[in-house]
Image (cartoon, rainbow, N blue to C red; front, side):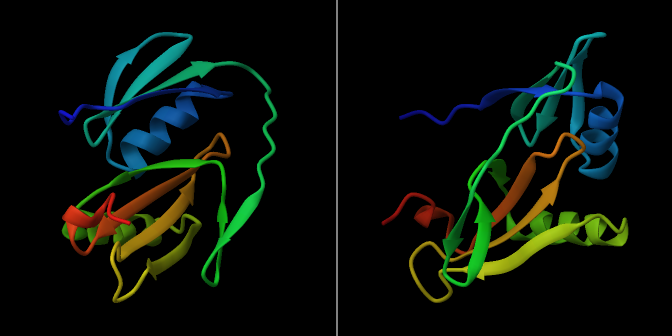
Length: 138
């Protein structure tokens, strides 16, 4: 299967806070932008946030090894250098960066991971695999 960019559309309450978080804090690029929605280029993937007013979503957590993780989240897989720079950047901004951990250490699929919450309450995960050829290996 050919590699392709990903598109995700999500509701949001405040477009300005959302744009600030993704462009200033995460360093993503702003795409098309209107009064009701905005496109964010997050490492070549399109996330569209639509102004939806107050909304509620409940999600449960799950356990992976010793870590409790949010079952509802999205994220990107990036190289280890980019991962380290982004982690340091967010940490220096005093953002709540959670679950910084190595999963499957010394096993197939070993990867670094951390989560950060956006202004809409979404958990965004950033992963970096030790061996990128193992992203889908079981």
